[in-house]
Image (tube, rainbow, N blue to C red; front, top):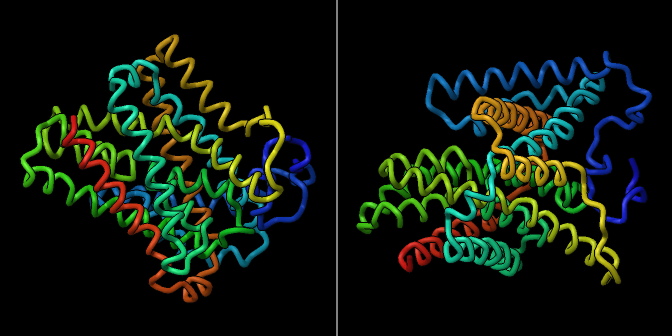
Length: 352
C-alpha cells in the first residue's frame, strides 16, 4: 500500500513507514510472522498474568516487558511478526473499540457536558502543542502527548502515532510517551477520587471529573466506581464519550499534518483509513441495532488483547539506547496535558 493510493494526507504508519521488515507483505509466508508474533503473544500473556495477580496496570506491564525484550528486534526473523502485531493488531483493536459506543450514550450525557468534553479535548491539545517550545520540545511529540491525554491514553497514542509516524517522532520518544501516559493515568486513578472527596463533589461532579480527565478507559471507570457506584456510572458514560471522539480527532490531526506537509489543500479528501471507517461503522451499527451484550463483551476483550499486543510489539521495536538521549523535558508535554485536562475537567464539573 502506498501513500499515493489515497487522497488522505500523509499518514506515516498507515502506509508502512514504521515497519522493521522491508519485504512487501505479498512476498511473505505465514511462517515469516510466527517468530515475532509468538514472542509478542508470550510477553502479552506474561503482562496479563502480572496485572491480574498484582493489580498492576496491564498497559504498564506490557510496556515494561516489551522494553525488556527489545533485544529480540535485532533478529530479523522477528521483524515481520512484530510489524504485524504493532500495526494490524492495533488497527483491528481500534475498530473493535467502536462496539463500546452508541448514539444513546452521547444523548444520555446531554448537550452541555458533551460540548464541555469537546472543548476540553481541543484545549488540552492546543495548550500542550502551544507550550512545547517552552520546554524545547517538538510540536509533533506534544501533539502525541496532548491527543493521548485528551482521548483515551495509550490506545489514542498508538492511533495517533500511526498518523504522525516515526519520521516526525522517533520510536524512543514514542515509547517514552507511552510510559509517561501510562504512569500518569495510574497516578490519576489513585489521586483523583481522593481529591474529588476532599473537594466535596457530588457523585455526578466526581464522575464527570474522573471520566473527563483520567487517560485510560479501564482506570477512568475504576476510579469512578472507587468514589461511588453512581459516580462510576457517570464516569463510564463520560469516558466512553471521549473514546467516541477518537475518530474525529484523528481526522483533524490527519488534515493538520497534511496542511503542514504540503500547504493548504483545495478540497477535503474523501477517503479515510479503513480502521477509522471500521470504528465509525461498528459504532453506527451498535447505535441502530444494539449489539448483544455477549458480543460487546467479546469485542471489548478482543480490543484489549489486540491493543496489548500492539503495545508490547511497539515496545519491543524500541531502541533502548535511544531512550538515554531523552531528558526530563521529554515528559513536560505529558505533565502539561495532564494538568490542563484535570483543571479544565474540574472547572467543568463544578459548573454542572
